[in-house]
Length: 330
Image (tube, rainbow, N blue to C red; front, side, top):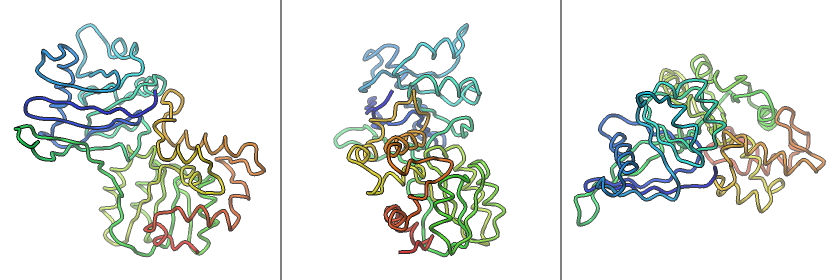
C-alpha cells in the first residue's frame, strides 16, 4: 500500500479532517480531546453507513478495531484485510506483541493507533505522532472542527548555542560522514538508537544527538524526559528522516525522480516492501549510485562522499539551526 489518504469525518456536533500518509500513524493526547469520539464515529459508520447519523468520506478502505469480539481473535479479524487503513484503539494489548509487529510489517496495510504508550516494537516516524486539536466552530453551525497537529514538529530548537560533542545513533556511514566533516568536534557513536536516552542522561558536555527520525518515534518521549533532567548542560536532538534522506538532497547525487520522491515520498514507499521511510531512502540511494564509481553502502562510506565539494553540497542542505549548532565549515 502506498499513497496519501484524506479523511473527512462528521457528526452534527464535531468534524475531523486529516491526512494519513505512512504505514504507521500515532494519535496521542489526554482524555476528552476527541480520540474516542473519532473512533466511535468511524466504527458506527462502518456498521450502518448514513443510518448512523454520521458522514465519513475517505478515498480508501478503512477498518476500526475497538476490542476483541467473543470467539474471534485479532488475527482472524485483521489478517484478511488488504490495502486498508486500520484504526486500533489503545486498550488492545496485542499491539505491543512481537506477533503483531511481524504481521504489521508484512501486511502492507496502513495503521492508525490511538495510544498514549509508545509502541517499542514498531519503527514509526517522529513526524507521524499527532494530537487532536480543536480549531473552533464552523461558521453558521454548532459543529466544532478538529484536526491533527504534529507533536514534534521542528523539535527541539529554541535557541542557538555551542555543542562540544556530536553523537550519531550508529557507527556506520552517517558516523563516518559527520566525523569527517566536523573535525573540530568530538564525534561519537551511540551504537544504536535505543542507547540515545541513556547517552543523554550521562553525557557531561553540551551535545547534539543526530538520529534517524523515520524510525525514532517510539523513543522520542524517553529522550524528551531525559533531556528535561539535564539542567546543567544543553541537549539538542536533530531528527532528519535518515542520513540517506539528507544525502539524496545533494545536487551531485540526486536526479529528477529523486527530487519528486523527496517531495512526495508516500507515493513511492510501498508499506509491504519497506517498513519505514528510512529503509526506502537507503534503497533509493543505493539504486541510483550502484552503477557509478561511488556506490553507496550503509556500512562503509565510499571516499567519494567525503570529497570536499561533495560534503559542502550535502551540508548545504542542513537546516540553518543545525549548521549553527554544529558550526559546519563553509
